[in-house]
Image (cartoon, rainbow, N blue to C red; front, side, top):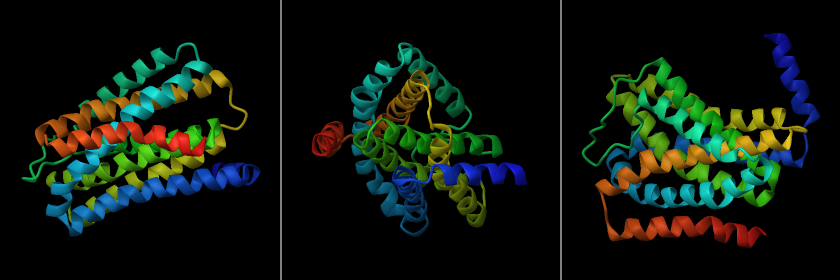
Length: 258
């Protein structure tokens, strides 16, 4: 264990540069978005559940746009099998979520979920870990794509924080344990960002392309499986407007950043 820690610290020192600081910073910001969702439920539960639908609508648009118009084209330039990787990642997240059933809770507070066990928490944590790696991969390509990836992660991390702590409380966990497990999920994102820095040094282009395709598949799955069905349940004109604005937003970011 000591030798592993020593190796990790050595690799971090080797990669200490402005880009490392940028990736770590945005990884922490994304992790804090999950924390924000956690405490919104704990202190403003009714308000969080009632108004999270607007963030979910905007987030769905951003995720769809980021996956299809930004991550996928970049991945196809780097890896000719990008579409296969996207399909595999989509199926993988379906299998993972089949045992987790992580959906946002409605205004009534009813969560249609199975009891959450440690295996399910590992699945949720793995997704958050991947979110951090997505941020690192994005910045490896360009600053603009890194910002777009961070924005996409950040926006769906708040609903994820709301969902995670709600599901844990609904499944019979004590408030203390629910907060503890939710914090572990939140910290997985900056850990993933650090792993990206450690693993992406001199990475081959085809591997980088595959990772981008996996990220695209992850974003598509979250949007299609979790967010859009929730929007349909509470369909309002404002939700449609927010989805469209969410689709346009990454294009605006890329136009501004170049």
